[in-house]
Amino acid sequence: MPVLDGQLRHGLATVAYHDGEIDTLAEQLRELIRWRLGECDAPAFLDREPSASRGMDGSADVLAESVTDQPTPEDIDPALLERLKSTPPGTWFEFAPGTESARNGTAERAKLSWVSPYSGRCLFVNRNGMRVADRRVDELVRELEQGMARILESANLLQEAMNDVLAQLRASEPVASANQG
Image (tube, rainbow, N blue to C red):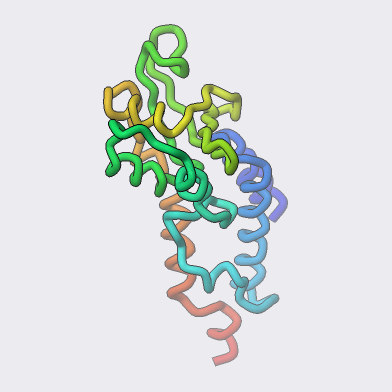
């Protein structure tokens, strides 16, 4: 178990997960393994449905909440604004050369790490967790409209894989029940 925990923590840190997210996932993994071995009852997180509007730590969609109260210029695409509101922290973006985020004339990938609940500004970090940029939502919408930024849909493969594993585990009965039956 300590080796698995260490590898999980190292891997998640490598792809710019925050310490809080890593701690939550590591604890859930420990609970899941203990449950599968029949050492404890089913963890509470198994009963929750995965939600696209929640972050890794289960926090509510901060972007949607913070943007709701923000005034928006009339020329912003409302459909794109709604899409951004439902984009959870942890989503990867790619910024084209010529933007504040893209250095050395090459496109740069950055993860939406945090959204300020007060100003609605979005903080982006690179794979090492270093700040790349921060944007107001209207700036981000404009960059998306102009093709200077794009949302990387396939960059959430790790999260999708984790959700698939949890779904499979929810569908199967615990080992303890099989042994008792």
